[in-house]
Image 1 (cartoon, rainbow, N blue to C red):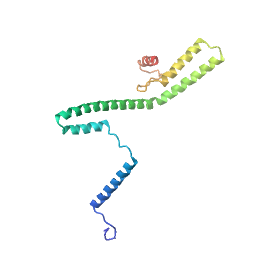
Image 2: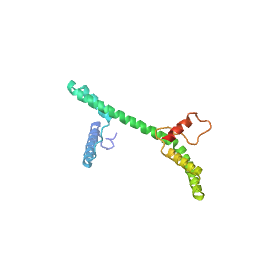
Image 3: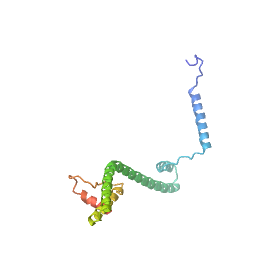
Image 4: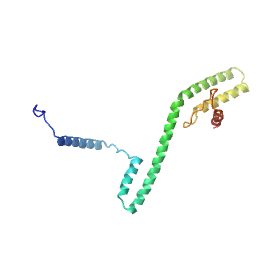
Length: 172
């Protein structure tokens, strides 16, 4: 139909030729820009080495086996690090609001206590309260990222272990 209308018709092989020429030109432009080639991941290198290992002789295979073992250890470390980061991100998202409100509450209380200390003569009770609030603020800010957050301001129906865990975290 296209030929009858006077349009140029390309066969599939001609289309492939155009695509190959376009790809070749793109590669040339890429090489002119000197873009660094992407580095293979440890997982991909392990797969490649295992494939080449199947075609190797026994004496050359030992060296490749050692390299595979090193790469697998490296991949396991990277995987563990990714899991750790994912857990920290999950807890950061989950407890952000709670920690924000607790921090605000502690900062306001601390400001009140410090104003009282400036206005009147400092009493040991006010000094103790200020010290406790500073510790509470440090507890909120520096709580370990990879652990579930235990709130300072607790509910009445909390788990019996919670006060012990909170005291343990405060000592850290």
